[in-house]
Length: 90
Image (cartoon, rainbow, N blue to C red; front, side, top):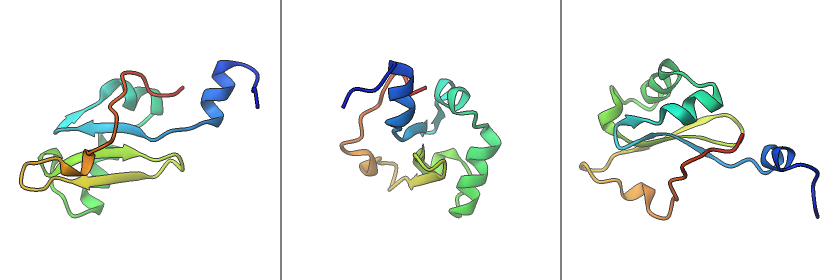
């Protein structure tokens, strides 16, 4: 099925967005998704984490909820198979 414009297609085919990777905020993705550092830190606290160093990644899911993948002994095994994209969907 072909949808109208690429912009409409991107909105309909939502994908998760990486907000934190390896202790670093993905500022561009956060801006596009209108999420703040406080939003990310609140998600960390809700998982019992104190700071970004304890998270392997933080992902904004398609339902707008935030998932936190905890770091395992400094390794980011939970990210196996997750592609890191340069541009998040609009």
